[in-house]
Image (spheres, rainbow, N blue to C red):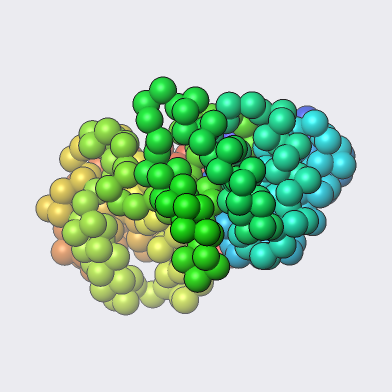
Length: 323
């Protein structure tokens, strides 16, 4: 719905800005580059939109463009100076990414005071305090945060406390949490040290197994090599496959097994044919993947419904049809 609104609404209208802002937030963690494009669309028409600047800052952080991210968060704070999350993310970047712990302290202290009791912010603040040389206050801040957590210290907090007890040696620096997104939404708080074992997503809602995902990549590449598609179209097919793994497969149990991979790969290839107006039939595409036309048609129907695919779809099309 948001993609459709972004395509059809007049540029600069409230509807267009709404669609691009929400698309940026939804895409930022799995595709920060595309999310940044949507954030820029917002800022092109709403330069005073603090959320747009903060989204752009988060995108650039995840892309590794830390100085750009710092500049974007400054812009966000200029427009919303009381927002503790903007201050936290700016301080975190200065401390961990740029190694400027002393410059980070005013921002993290401000965030800490504004969001008393938040473990993410307290941990980041303690980390910066230690790196700036104030071990005593760092221990106090972290101890209060650990005590306030009724479920006990997190693994990250325990590791940070051990580092503080050792005198915060630079060679064994413990990273603070990753920058938090835009609000106090726990489901969006990713940690820099998160491991695969920390995944608490219900198994029924996860995507395919690593085996199935890897098999999809191989089968798709093999089938694409037999189709008359150019390099850009094949690259877009891989992008669509990544989107399908995140947005389509988790909601369709039958797509999660390795047995359905060839049909899904064929449907992804045909989706590019569909959006890019390539003169190929479903039967011709299905033959390249050695699947039945019925299997391709069924999987393509699911892709089209979940991803809201349309002919000429700007997300995946490479050729613009004119006239």
